[in-house]
Length: 112
Image 1 (cartoon, one colour):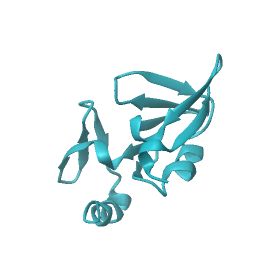
Image 2: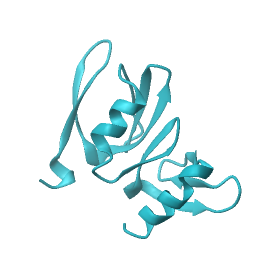
Image 3: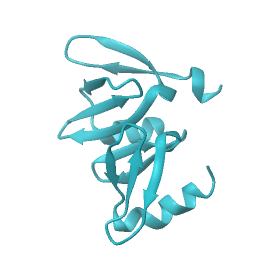
């Protein structure tokens, strides 16, 4: 099944959402919760940890750039090099690349 029609179920405090994976730009850890940022600019506060989303999504186009950040590599606008490397996402957010994840990340970029 292509990523475009793959859905995941996300529970929030008020509802259960069925989201297309291809609409998720990035996820950010908020303690035991995760904020999910969608392509249209909406955000969802999910009652799951970032580790949960990482395990669910890392076999697709997602990469854990940092302890608090999981990104969909399809939405990377640019990669900014240097000691404090980061990616600029399509939603204009800057997401840090942890130093110890940088080589894995660059390897992934070469295989996009």
